[in-house]
Structure formats: structure tokens, C-alpha cells
Length: 381
Ligand code: SAH
Image 1 (cartoon, helix red, strand yellow):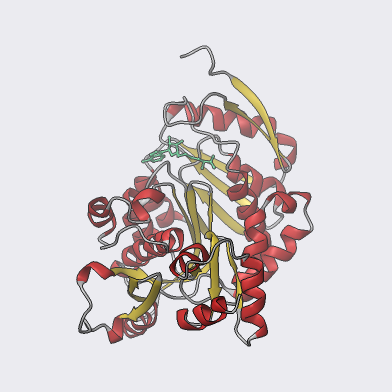
Image 2: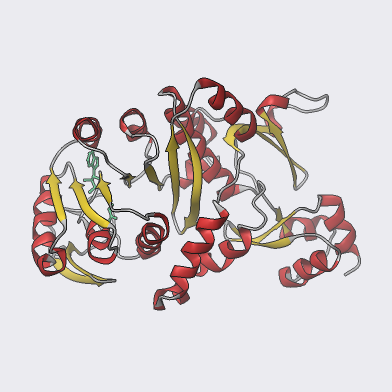
């Protein structure tokens, strides 16, 4: 072990843990990224907002166990957590972290395992009802989606992290196809395209087991995506109508885009396959009521000031249609320099359109206006 790697104490929310400090990478004895605090805080806010009854949480790739421990110690309704990691050193560290939080874990049930998550999720769901499974790998979640989709019960929550954003935005088209079965390349839709690719992968795996999902909350922060969905099991008829509404393709051209829903897909004249990307999830990204509740709860906490993305998401939930325009690209097209995004949003609103920023892109504008409407307004500036 290199000298720089040592056990350190870390306090977040109500939970203290030990972790191996050092450069954040796969080669740490136990993976932990102190800077991924947004993901952990939003997970806690989600739990507080969503669950009305007691629930059991399965942290299938737990690392230090911090997420499950935070839920147990900070969310009253979380009365049991199952914490698992395949790495023996993580397993030992989880034990230690449970011990140092012992006082706060009174009346709570904790079980720990040192197994392959793919095996554990199948075994555990045969024995008991799990209300929420979290899949938080280093890299792509694909290796875990089949087993979790097969195992997860209807009405349960599935939350999934992906850190392979480069692949998901289409920077490496062959890898995107190989891993996710999606045709796409890098475009200005970047991270929203990426998260919609991830959602398609989650949906596709669930559908194989006659399940589908309601997307409740998603976000992009730094180098990862996180999605929270509710799993549902109905008949094939419901799955077919879900496909019609929520799966489709996007045509990206001239700084503009067009959604092609599955039920309407037809290759129009003049459209080359190169411009069409997908299949992706094209449905809503937020359950509006729940998202508002999550944000209200977050606002009561000091940490809110440090979670900038929630400020944008608060507006985004009101314009929950796919994608956005990039102001820099449109200004460049019109040979205009430095147009303020605030001003353009105001202008759109004053002209009767809905418009807001998006947390997916600093220069992105979500709006129900068409490109030609924005271009007309930009010309007046
Ligand atoms: N959830 C953690 C981060 C986990 S990083 C947090 O919030 O800090 C991913 C973890 O998955 C690593 O600890 C790694 O050991 C574990 N892992 C990788 N493959 C696994 C598998 N097949 N089954 C269970 N755990 C696995």
C-alpha cells in the first residue's frame, strides 16, 4: 500500500465514517469520493420525500457503506439497510463504520454481505421484500442491470449511477452501441442525451422481465448521472403503450432537434441515419410533485446553498419536455457575440413562451419555443 493511503475520518450529515484517503481512483483499497456529496445528499432528500412507510434499503455496491448509514441515521422511515460489497476490505471497513455509528443505529436493523451484487440481489429478494435497491458502481451500471431488473419487486425504487458519461454522450459511438445498444454521437444535447441513454438501458432491462418504470428524479453532476425510478409490473399491453410514449429517437441537425416517437418513427426524406440517434428514453425526467417536495426538503438544509443544480432543476420540472437549445451555438449561427442567457430567457417569457435554464448545460435553454422563434427574438437584440 502506498504511503499516502491511510484511514481518515469523515463526517457528512449525521454520519461519521472511516475511508481510505488518497487520489480518488479505482485503485484505492476501498473506493470513496468525498466530492460526490451531491449524490449522497440528494439520496437522503429523496428518501425523506418519497417514503411514507418504513422501508428496507439495499446498498448493493456500498464501498464504505456511507450511503446506507446516512439513510439509517438520518431518515426515520429507513428501518433496515442491507449493505454489500464484493471487496473484502470494503466489507471490513463497513463493519468498522457501523460500529462507530452504533449509538445512532439503535432500533435500526443492519445486515452486511461480502458478495457479488448480481448474486446477492437475486438471493435476497427471494427471502424478503426490498423497497429500494441502489446500484452505484464505478463506471457503467450495465453489468448489474439484468440481475437487478429480474430481482426487483414491482412498486420498489431502483436508483442507478453511471460514471461513463463520455460513452453515454456519444463521444465513442462504437462503445455506446456495444455497451448500450444505442446509435449516437456527441452533439450539443450532450448530458441530457447521456442520461436518456442510461434511462433507456434501465427500461430495456426491466422490460425483459415484463416490468417498466416511472422516472421520478434524475440529475447530472460533475462526472456522473443518477436516476431514481419506480418499478412497475403490469401486462404487456401497458408495456406497449409505455414504449409508444416513452421510447424514441432524436434527430439532431443545425443546432436544432426533433423528437421521433417510437410509434411515429419513419425515415423522412432527406434524413440520413447519421442524424438520427437512439433509441433513447424520451419521457418526463421528473415526477413534478415529488421533485418539488425533494427541493422543499433540501431548502431547509444548509447544504442547499452548495447544490447549485437543484436551483435549475426547480425550474426544469415545469418544462419537462426533452432537450434544449444551446445559446452559444445559436448566437454563433447568427454571428452575434455574448448574448446573456438571462436576457434571452426573459425575452422568451415576455413573448409568451416557457423558458428556463437547464442543469444539463450552462448555455442551455429549455423552452417550448421552436428554434425559429428563438432566432427571431435573437435578431432583435
Ligand atoms: N456507493 C459507494 C461507492 C461505491 S464504488 C459510495 O457512495 O461511496 C463501487 C463499489 O462497488 C466498490 O466498492 C467495489 O468494490 C464494488 N463492486 C464492484 N463490483 C462489484 C460486484 N460485482 N458486486 C458487489 N460490489 C462490487
